[in-house]
Amino acid sequence: MGWLTKEFETAPCEVEVSHCFDSLHAHVKFLNGAVINPGDEVQVQGPPVMAPYGEVVREERIARITRASRLEQLWTRMTGDFEFMELCEFSFSEEVSV
Amino acid sequence: MKDVHDAPVVHSADATNVEDALEAGNYRQAVIDSESATAVAMRNTLLTPRFYTTDFDKLDAIDVSPVRKDWDKLIAQMKSDPNRGHFKKNEDWDHIDWDGMEPKLKAEFIDFLISSCTAEFSGCVLYKEMKRRGNNEDITTLFQLMARDEARHAGFINDALREAGIAVNLGFLTQAKKYTYFQPKFIYYATYLSEKIGYARYITIFRHLEAHPEHRFHPIFKWFKEWCNDEFSHGEAFALLMKTDPKLTSGINRYWIKFFLTAVYATMYVRDHQRPAFHEALGVDTDWYGQEVFRKTSEISKQVFPLTLDIDHPRWMPGLKALQRANADLAEAVEKKQFFRGLGARVRAAAAFIGLFTIPAVPNDPPVSTRLEPAY
Image 1 (cartoon, rainbow over the protein chains, first blue to last red):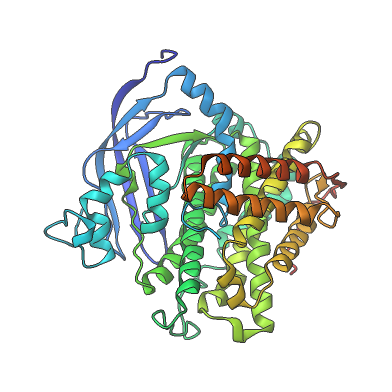
Image 2: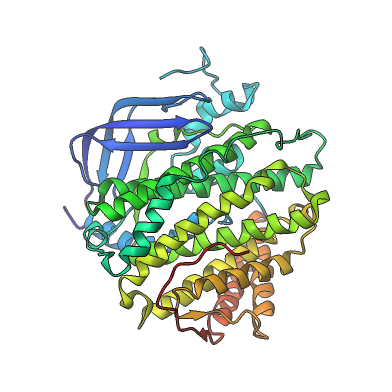
């Protein structure tokens, strides 16, 4: 891993999207044990995985992992904590203003 | 994969409904960078939660032995899933005349539902990730149960949104998502607080509407009580986790706790003031509501935090108001592209926040046994 250079890799993954009354969720599981580190970027390849209402969709896909540079990883470790507010229901959105 | 539409719309302007519009090429393209993704999420309800990593070795190293008895009891209660049957629509779910709703109220209420849905969804993503990558069975069990509850809440809100003609789009996985980082201790502080303040917010509205049913303009509020009991027990679990290591609530971490409390309270105050029509329809004075929620949250948080904020301090309310004004100015300056006015507003907001943060805290000596039951 370089200080400034990014590296790419691909990993098979299982995507599960549930669009049900009982559960609204979407998860990615890597099938080759790939481990994601702070600052890494993950993009599931292919068209959006869309579950119609009332259905759970499970698909195997390929994910492209962009490994963060060492500097970026350090930065994410230092600053990521401040994004905690997103967990609150009253977190900020761009849309509303007084 | 199933797509309901045979021929995808190229531009959202050509779409006849929200789902088509979200599927349109211009939206898919529009959400590449995270800044615009947030903006688009709020307008078009494409959920774009963050993804998290943490120090999983540290998380695995937690030993719940010191609180084993309380822990097992809480987990057993969560496993028994007392609220399983609660999130169903029954005859209490009255018909809503969405078209007849006053437009400003409708916009603010939908914004409220979307941000609630996003928060539940983000919690679900965070907890699921912790569950998946952790190896400590106590911890992974807890995170799995919490992910279940959050996904259920998100599904329930989603259903209310669908009634309003708004489709939540879960297609975000195929966009590049950067994984951010939370230190385990910040996960405890932030999630503990977000769960407990969530409880205080929901129960305050629920009790208020119990006394003033004429203000209940949507049936979802009737479900708030059981809903917030889930939030309450999630918070209990984090309180127990923090009890396992006294270092988490002493020394320098006291300042982190104070920071988290101040940031969460201040954000809530500012954000609630952005929804005047919503609070008016509920018949709630926003300042009263804020203080009431802070008071409940502070009282609950005495179970584990070594301090509470002095929300009756003479500088508290003026500080919140200054922060709120600065924030409203900033939003307007950004909209009108007034750089220096925006800069000034940022400085004022920062000064107001520092002013709030430096109000001396009220020291607290948490009890030996942490467990609480919902009492409001």
